[in-house]
Length: 137
Image (cartoon, rainbow, N blue to C red; front, side):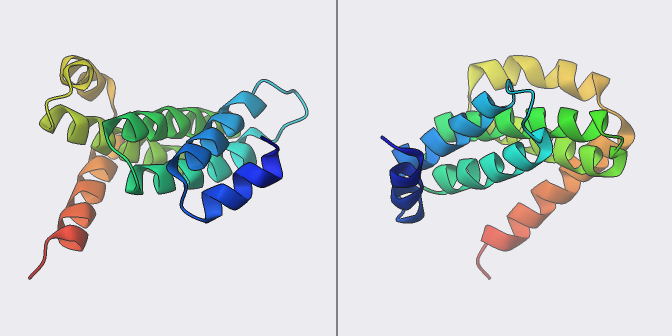
């Protein structure tokens, strides 16, 4: 499938196309001519859309994309943005652990131990936002 066909399908809500576009962004990171921050930012959009249409597999994809984005931001000297992105990663890993995902449940304590207080604060903000956003009054 061409990239433009996949984009059209992703825009129409096709979860598989959204996942394919997020994975395409991850593959672009290996190209030395790619702006990794731009590619991964776009990939995170498709991964978020796939998660909205999917399940834990799509959340794992979003974690992968965001982890790569956080590293790319850190490498470019964008520490504050990297902290926010890594905080979101922690919040998603925690959500997977709460849902009983065994890999997340096993990795969460080590991640929490290594994360800075700023990252943990960002994670808490994301979790509070999600709770406030999705809990009906």
